[in-house]
Length: 264
Image (tube, rainbow, N blue to C red; front, side, top):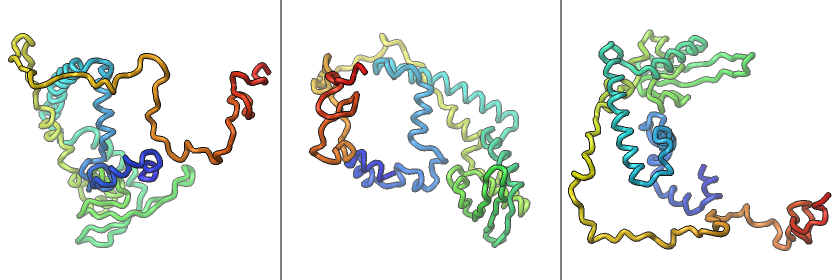
């Protein structure tokens, strides 16, 4: 990843390297993001606020506020109804664990340390699907697995469920509390108060501020826009004396507009 960044934008790569890796990479975040990346969260927000990118900034803020004001009570009512119905875990986690339980039946596990809950889980080969079985270490006490899914998502993967079945333990005891419906309800129960009419807003003085546009950011009305891409080694020709070739016949000495082979 760093090699790609360096080839495209050296300055940007240097800036990222100066930042702690746990702040912008999922591999070093200590499993604190539950498998979510900043780009994924941004795409979720863009899907909800679809159609507002072309609007002015005031309209974008208004649309965002009232869209969330309508979404939060709706989600809160959904999770509150599930809590009153006796549900504890969210549907997405239950579906993933049930799918992992079906896969866990095709694995073989060996307990290496019963006190510290160390296991070795072996997958069986599936020749008709081209799947070769591998071995993974599972440490239930630290809630880790070599597969990485248990560490990142904070609920048991198929290998951890196999280890739990070896000791006849409930795999739901290793699911993080953040997946409980109670926690989700606490997130969505916050409300956005109604905004009064603009005529009742308190007056604000903008005297010390001068809101003037930046003329350097003004786009030229005519002509081809200037490229802002940072050039690198890919844009440099292999030989400096290489003549420019025609875009039509790929021969030197003329351009595509004056190419004699254009009619052919």
